[in-house]
Length: 158
Image 1 (cartoon, rainbow, N blue to C red):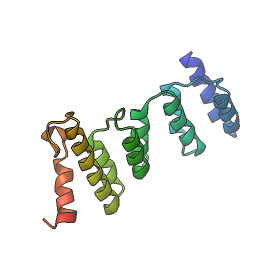
Image 2: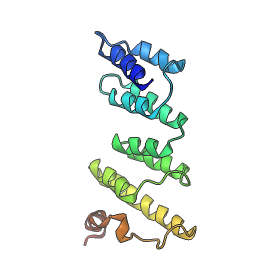
Image 3: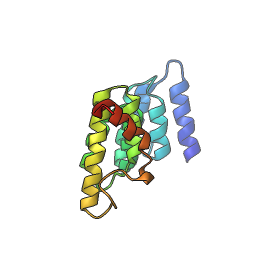
Image 4: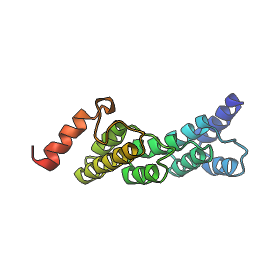
């Protein structure tokens, strides 16, 4: 079945011109079933068909893969949206602090890095209060030393 879906997607997207409206309808009417490989394929099409981003995210959501949704948002530079998403689904989304902070630094925006850093600190404090974390601060296992140093240099004048 995966082969047939790949074949369908290849035919639709490689035709000249690509038949993205057909793809959209096949997805809308569930002719092409939701799956992680199809969602990833949709996300790979966004440079040629921007609505594919939302189609891929919606599919990940329907598949109940909140971790993947958060990672996709981070990967595509949608930091604020990712933090909001992680915050509203804190019990089911566990993105490592290092991934969040790396995505924040990749934006090149100091305000977004500050926001992400403070978000991670608050997340750690909440986890500590709920006895799901050994310390409210950064642990060596978080692999955030580089980000902590960057934060200190930017915002604490060290």
